[in-house]
Amino acid sequence: MNTIDRNEEPRIAIVGGGIGGLVLVGMLHRYGIAATVYERDTGLDARRQGGTLDLHPDSGQRALEELGLTEAFHAAARPEGEDLRILDPAGRTLGRRAPEPGSGTRPEIDRGALRNLLMTRVPDTAVNWGRHLTGVEELPAGGYRLAFADGGRVDCDVLIGADGGRSRIRPLLTDARPTHLSAYLQLTITDADRRRPRTADFVGPGSLMALGNNLNLGAQRSGDGTIRVSITVRTDDGWIGRQRFGDTDWAQTVARLHGLFAGWDPRLTELIDACDAGSLVGRNIEALPVGTRWPSRPAVTLLGDAAHLMPPVGEGANQAMLDGVLLARAIADNGDDPVAAVMAYETEMFDRAESIGADSAQLESMGLAPDAAERMAAFFG
Image (cartoon, rainbow, N blue to C red; front, side, top):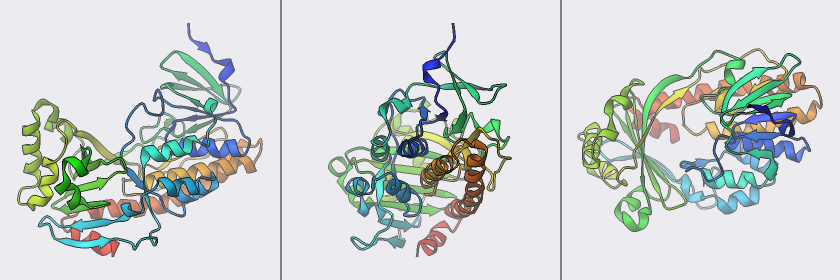
């Protein structure tokens, strides 16, 4: 029989234990405000956390400073990861961003390392792992009841959706849905310096982007010795399914990927050859409409991708972290008035997300234009 977890009734429930949700619960804890995160992963190391992030001074790094993690961040970050080269299909380097040692402002950090850092500011009892949300019910007396796949139920006074682009909390506020932008394939080269030294040397200490013909072939070094190779294709949302990459052996998969880049410089297409067999993972890139807003409600709001899913051009994680800081402050400043807290947070967040979302959409469009390499090289100076 399903039961209500009466011993798990936080005043504030945060659905989603990603970077934004962890910043929020860590900041609330610093303000002495109880909150609980409900995360579908079974633990911190339940799955790989993806590539690296460049944290911006006015958003991601600001959040770490507010949490007292600046020194730990710089110890874990990779300043050399800021190195970026932009190439055209002929393999010509059209632009490079390589700050002098000590002069960079956006050092890279592995997503997993960042999540571990944030967990040092979160009480162990504040995260409920293995809680896959399956439904939300608004209660007659106010607040919400959360239903989980394990049969558990939890009531809360304030509900915050930090559950990503496919948020289950968002429909409580708006019928806005993400729209398709492109198809994205990721492959990995593990232990690249030892196993693929020529490829590792070509990629360098940071990342590269080769752009042209509505394609983007990228490579990014992580702190764990892995290089992640990415392929972005301007196509419809059914393209990945039609490719049926999992139905072919690896040699055929590699040959089909090469077919996307016919005529490209061999140094670029050799990135595909160097990838680990079977490492391909595909997904569609989506974004919410720029300027998505909703009428404020007193007991529920969103942060991060749940609120303003943007193209993956460097702002998503940073804005989620800043959301966490500003929402926690609004809650602390407004005491027991959740109406005022939510309204104060959303007023600022809507304007900020619209401005940054518009810039991100422009950059995403530029990156898959026919003359993308020239335009991106000019953009990065």
